[in-house]
Image (cartoon, rainbow, N blue to C red; front, top):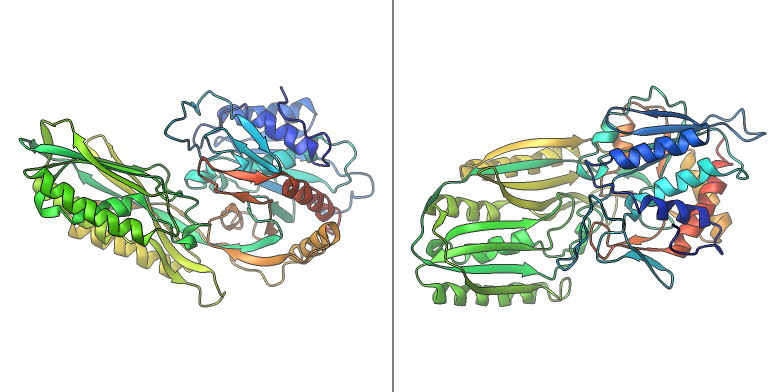
Length: 479
């Protein structure tokens, strides 16, 4: 059922397909249902279609009359989405549809992420493949999986079924900015073996909430508070007087941690509570501009029979203080661009281990390696294990790119405004796809989408409409 009426828009078919996709669960790592939906879409229209073992989908559409001699154009996006919700929400991302809400020019979801990242790309691709009246060269729609958890889908693309020489990635989130380069990165997993001892002391619970969070690449430059790092500072203030009972924080490696909790045991809980609350006042003052709604609550907790050993508690707290986070280096080549950053994304207890997931991004490979070495050094000094995972390369700027100039012209024609060519500190699949598609000219574009990877994610309806028109103008001018 099409819940929202966009009939007055040129992009009404884009929103129709976005609405249809919003009914289908597509959390990263659980894309089989949406992947099969895409395959059925192609087969129902007699389009050539391929589905690989990673559930990536490629579908092909023949050129319109008069465009047969132009090399195919690849339209590319990812089908998975970050699944975040408010604490109050009872939404089940494995089975419940995303509830779409329109407020003026804004499309958002009801207390969950919207999935505009990157459902809009797939919806635009489907609208092109479904259209009977849009002129175009041969089109190849490449829709990948697991982009949000390490770009595993893109890593599995071989180029075997792709003939296009121009690729338009629709995963950027600022209208009028065309991306031609992105950061590479990796995740570091640091785990502590949990060792416990009997606890005879009273306990306190520390709860950190109210943070804006956000995308750990795009919004890292906003200097927002990271709940895991805030918790580390509070615990360090009372390190010598406490044992950790349990601790957790964050939700996704590529989202700035919005919440963190810990239960601690202490002989003198009144003293510890007083010290933490004083430290909390200072931290809240530091972030009064970037995160004015930061909440730090310290309250009495049910007593626990066991707690982490004193040595383990101290090591964990020391690591939380030592772990790099936030903007680390700015680019020497591009003014205002973050070169290197780290994000303490997830802190989770599982299978008798406490694991930190720290996402590192950089447009300079040696700098990324340096930060990974810092994490490994901190892990070594605190008796933790550390390994690197999900490494992906940077997408390097190509001064000879032709599609970037065509994109600027298309945007100017549609909007009357000048667009910009920029690099981005987030990871894009273009970096990975450049390996199997080395001679393909690439660009990334998209409409205005804000607060991605958070329950506040929202997009501009009119911006989607404009960028849809730009996309149509762009594909008929690629030669």
